[in-house]
Image 1 (cartoon, rainbow, N blue to C red):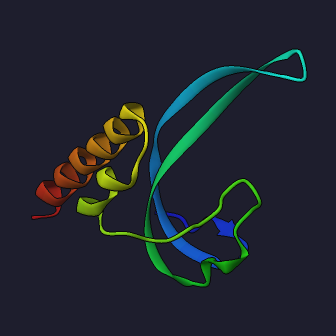
Image 2: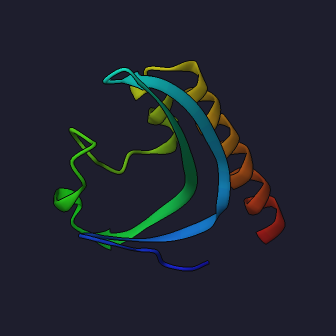
Length: 93
């Protein structure tokens, strides 16, 4: 695992888990956006310096995450992450 460098927080990342492609209209222009999702484990740092796109950033237990998410696609990502973690735990055992 490697540790990505982000302002204020430290984590160990696993391989990229998935990506999401969206399209929206902004000022009359069609905007295509690809979001890459990474499974990470918190190892320290301060989350207060997060970027402006988020109102709040915090680490939460995996079991709590689905209840905090708005969209079914986001909940599906958490379910996929849980399966990845369970699979990794079985390999380590």
